Image 1 (cartoon, helix red, strand yellow):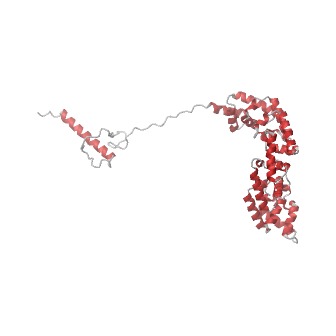
Image 2 (cartoon, one colour):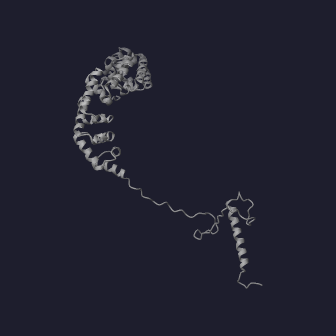
Image 3 (cartoon, helix red, strand yellow):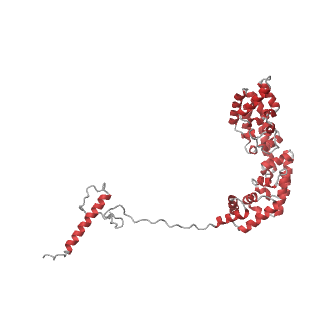
Amino acid sequence: MLAPAGLAVPGLRAKQLLSSFRCHAAVAVSRRCPAQHPGLSHSWPHAPSPHRTLHLTVPCSQSGSSGSNSTNSAPTSPPPITQPFPDPQQDRTKELGMQLAITPHTAFRLAHAHAGSSVAQLVSATQALAASLGIPMEELCVLCSKETRLLSTPIEQLSRSLNVLRNTCMGGLTLQDTARVVIYSPALVCVPGEQLEAQFGALVSQLGVEPPLLAALARQQPYVLTTPVTRVRAQFDALSSLLGVDLARAVQLATAQPYLVVNPRLLQSKIGALAQLLGAEPTEVIRCAVEFPLILAADTHATSAWLSASSRFLDLPAAQLGQLVVRVPAIITLQPALLQQRFSVLCELMPARPRGEVMALVAAQPSLLGLEALAQPGPPGQQQQHQRS
């Protein structure tokens, strides 16, 4: 029996839909995986694997390209913008820096060192200390961040200890300079003044040096004021025996170069290398080091290169130039070209004298080369700043 026009047989229509679905599914799979399905055509040769997922493309009317499979996922939305949670420690550090007028780094260290104190407590305590001790706020906050006992120690005791440190133990420094020294040993401020005076007197008697020299040593190495006297004496005895000098000269060397007590054998090797390089005795090099500490701070290879270049510029033997360095160690601060220029001017002014004799005059009178300021040794314990002319 024929169906009326306009009506479709339900069974036939279902078969047509199933056939069309299989055709489109096969095309989609062949387009996505041509290497894995080389023989797959528009027909469906066998049933699909139950573990295979078919990705069917759905035409999008908004894109204007029907039947294309350019996308297979929904558009992703941008990630939500989240506001960070407020950091109370950061706000506390910022408030400390603004109220105390200190750098952010110092405020951060102060806030973390005294995490249990409020901003108001820290501001009140540090301002009271600064007003009583006369120390600049920046240095005081660094001290308080290194030594937390400062805020709990009575101000009278701190003031007494600070006065003993600056007037007795360090030879009369200003408050600001004293604060810069004790930053490396902040526990000194918390030591009672009577104990500091007793330690200083015991060191003077044990080391056999004058108080100004010991004060210079304390400025360079504040730890000697808190180290047992017997241990300090043992360190300097070892240094003096290693170098073959007396105790006072060992203290002078340690004042000029603070690292010497820590590594005396490095000092011994450096003095030996300089003595061989300059053609001098080790005792002469030690004297140069006491008068001009920069000669030990300079690299040995750099000193050798300076001697070689200056010897060529001045047309003098290296041994004679080495003796000049021993007599006037500050001469190594002059560049070889500048040294040649000044030496040539002297030779032109004294044409009748040979170059070696002119050099001997320079060794006797360093002012001829403009070295009068550089050749004068500074006070013990203070590193002189030498500028190139």
